Length: 83
Image (cartoon, rainbow, N blue to C red; front, side):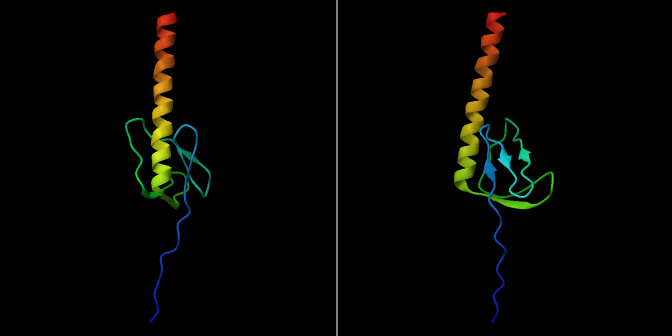
């Protein structure tokens, strides 16, 4: 009896801003500020290839995005007060 296995999907990476990096074409897929990334299977909006988002990558992306957005808010407020 032959068992067919699904091919393993490559894992995505995460940049310092919390954006997902496609493992096939290395496009940086920018997550909207109101979205939370979850573990599972994703697909690239540029090349269309599928990739796996691990729980660890999802946590890191969400943490990095939160830090980036908080820093941008603080800089915007600082610039508004200084002008």
